[in-house]
Amino acid sequence: MPNKGVGAFVCLVIIMFDITAGILGIRAEAAQNQEKHLRLWLFECKEPSQEAFRLGLGAIVLLIAAHVLANLLSGCTVCNHDDIQKASLGRQLSLLSLFFTWVILAVGLGMLVIGTKANHKSNASCGLSHHHFLSIGGILCFVHSLFSVAYYVTATASIH
Image (cartoon, rainbow, N blue to C red; front, top):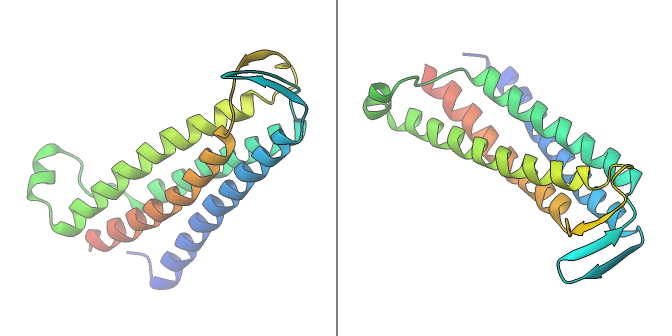
């Protein structure tokens, strides 16, 4: 088990990556909203925002980095079905946190990718609205930090 200083540093890095990703996602949404667009119900025609594209891409990279960091440094606490049923409460909480980090990653990353792709310079077109995808993905980055830190703490604590 890593010492408390290393564990606190890892948790701080995970939080910083996720919070920065969340802020970038929200700022990308704001940059996207500054571009000219015409909206009719669910359809909209808009100019892509290069700033929103860059900020969204940064949010995607940081979210993935935080997720990889939390998962690689935590280790596998329970690896088969029989171990899950016999596992201690700490290990079960670890697995629950792990499950939620993957679900939040999938939804948040999907939202960020859709919102970022809509702002790629070659996508100046009309189609379904991708409104608020970047900000929702950014908010999910904040939630991801909570479950990632919970997973890291419970996984490393239940190993010993």
